[in-house]
Length: 495
Image (cartoon, rainbow, N blue to C red):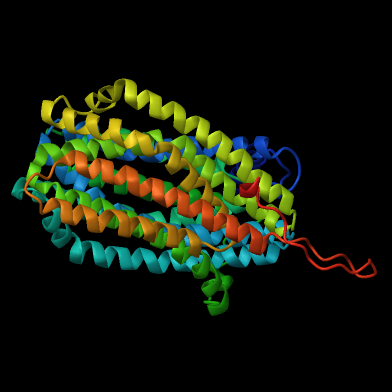
């Protein structure tokens, strides 16, 4: 990675070599996904995305490993406060999904100017969202942790972690804007390399700041938040330098940072529903922490560890879903509709195979995953049981991810939001009602979650089938050819 102190010509040459090898394409750093094998394109994009997401998840796992040495209260505090990250994830999805969809459509049409304008408007939105995140985190973070934490020790740990992690959350928007634009052009390796760098830095900082290695001044949960914030800041700087020093297919152009209301509305029209999905996930997680708080810090700690482990297990399938959007999006922009349908078929086959393997693994030895982070018997029992039960919805979750990626590729994510809304109704209300009953147990929450995810998967498939019928229609023939009406194509969901 070129540094700010290195020679400009040397930095540019290094960056160009990185772009060419990372893209497997020419020096314009754009990869045409409308040609060649779809399966190969999905796997080629999903692998570096998965590696990048793995390193991103390691932020949480590294912190959790060292925080676990501080006891159940610290684990529960960091885990519960970490759910606030889903609000930021919702907002970054709003920004990222809109950017990937519109950039990939423009690339499919070979409209570089439109792709570049979309990217720079995304940079503008990232700055606005980052400032709002800083204000909200410092003003409302403590109140949020107090509302879901099990006891005062959990509140103290969670609040300290969240305050120091808030700057890192704010900087996530810049990373997402730049990474999403690259993904829309078919390039994913530069973002992966930056994520690897930041996680390595976080791994080095975590024991120093959390446990006081070398300094003898442990900061505890606050150190976990600070380590992540510093690492993310370094990642933003490196990725910004990469963009600034390379003449890219999309590049940073300050003159295009003036607001374009019509284009911003287009980005948000695609992105807002996707952000709403993650916000609903945040609500569901917050409700789970709230309804199980009566079982004590060990229960919240076990669920927190189990949830983080599950997030790590889902990485390959989530990466595949992220790969769907640029692959199908470019083909949708190029009106190669059969390749759009084939992308969904191939992706669902791959994700289903992966999720089936993960289900069997969790049924066999779920406690192994939990014991990597805590040896507290109560926390291990809760976490292992949670993974064993929740594994029965892994296959359905894979279908939901694939459908969500396709909705994003088609530029209409409202059906995906409707599907998530259905889960909100089928889980949150029953969970709250069950928590008021005298014989309420944790198992009831886990089985309710399995049922609600299954219903969400069926809803997503039905809505995607309708979307295929509406949007994947035959292209009109060129002028001079025999006129024919556009005939709806057969959805891949219809066999």
